[in-house]
Image: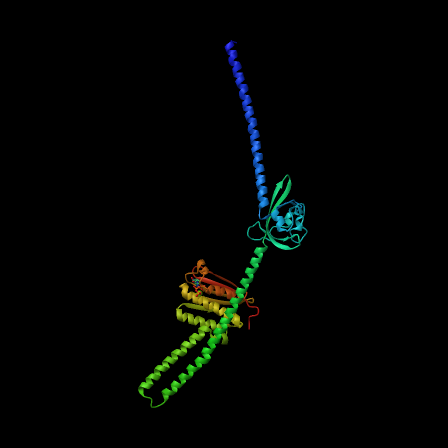
Length: 392
Ligand SMILES: Nc1ncnc2c1ncn2[C@@H]1O[C@H](COP(=O)(O)OP(=O)(O)OP(=O)(O)O)[C@@H](O)[C@H]1O
Ligand SMILES: [Mg+2]
């Protein structure tokens, strides 16, 4: 080997050595750097996680498979009116009521399919027990993770006492409003009945006797021709006044409702509707099935009256079918028209009270009502009313 070749070879060998050293060094430092970065990320995550869990406003618990509390955050301690250390290591049964049977695992406190709070599929409604024994409503969710071969449950809980109180207050005020509305309906009906009776018995009698006097006057001899004309005009005005008075009184409260019963009152309503609006209307009902007490008769009459008024005002219909059937102690009322059909947004109109009043009357009788567009066209109202003590 020439000295030049030897020199070239030793130079190449050195280069390989340096390269190997550098690449080995680089590889070593890269792995360490990656390990370090991973651990930093984990630490930051854990610190962040711990900070989040510690500052969370919801109570967070970690529970082992035997329902013992491994970890509780300060919000949990605050919620159960105790300390974190008093909770950790304790049994979940000290803080949450199990559902009847002896609870062994965390899921026994949150049984599938039972007590769902409803807002989310994973929410459960459970009852919490504060350190002083006070019970309170909780909404919670539970999730399971496998850690080192052990099953750990994370439970997130929220005290919903205030929401429950607000809901109860809302339900109470809703009830009171409903009672008020029902009382107002009754008062209104009584006043209508009273005014209709006064109009009929008082003013009606007066007009009838005036008419009789006029007839007597007409028969008397020696009346001058202009006077006779005047009396004829007065009599015709009187007849019109008597007819108007009857119409007004009937609109206020049909006498048929008090004297004949619901069936005849509905017949009168149907006849007047057909005559006034020129829309065909069939009434399918049995007189014997409609012998109901006053409040039920009045409510059904007013519901049908509002439905017919709506059909005349909004439906653009050519025919209506009223069906009243009594089946197994329930009255099924169906009102159908073949008009343009009610739309969903029609039922939300804030200023419209007709449908609201209809619903209120049905609910006041513990009944059910559905109002919808019909097939192929038109509107359909279906009402089911329990009639237990309403028959006369
Ligand atoms: N039979 C029907 N066909 C088509 N639309 C209807 C029918 N009945 C009701 N509607 C629609 O529903 C809306 C609400 O009816 P609702 O009786 O509550 O109020 P309204 O008749 O407008 O006013 P009011 O308070 O005087 O009764 C109506 O404005 C109308 O648009
Ligand atoms: Mg209306």
